[in-house]
Image (cartoon, rainbow, N blue to C red; front, top):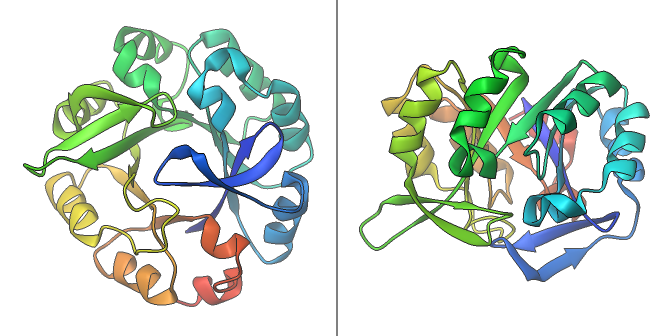
Length: 242
């Protein structure tokens, strides 16, 4: 599935360059404009991220998110600062056809997530693992809206995630995100070869239809695309045909 992405800072649609908040591109219209445009073009799902909430959970754009969710007729996967059960309950009450993206909480308080699975279907969640490769090619996980480097590597957290029944994984190579330099094909090829039991979503760097074809050729089924759609590199219909 091709999934258009919308990132939000203070209510405005933006794209970050390599996860850097000081290197952001702002776009002209509000999120509802882009969402309705994507729906009209045939989108079946929207990827929505509250970057304010991801950076600091106290700054979640709850009013805006509630408004977007209530007025969107297709499925949404939504992330950004989900640290407490009450926040998750609020979103699920608004729309049951939603998947919540868990990022930093997976690293900072894994016990919370394990406890939540007593109440929710594991398939209701997507685990976002945002990584940078170090000089030894270790996949280091970053948290708090990509601002903080953890001491966790991708393989270690994947084992824990799979052990509690979470299988939807979104992996972003931060160094590629928002750059138009192409996705990290080798990274995703390694992940799906090593962990065939996960549902892996790819994100970051996509700028051409060839990028989409390359991801599909290695077995990636869900591809998240942000800046390329916002800047009209190609249309959603063209992406569907790849």
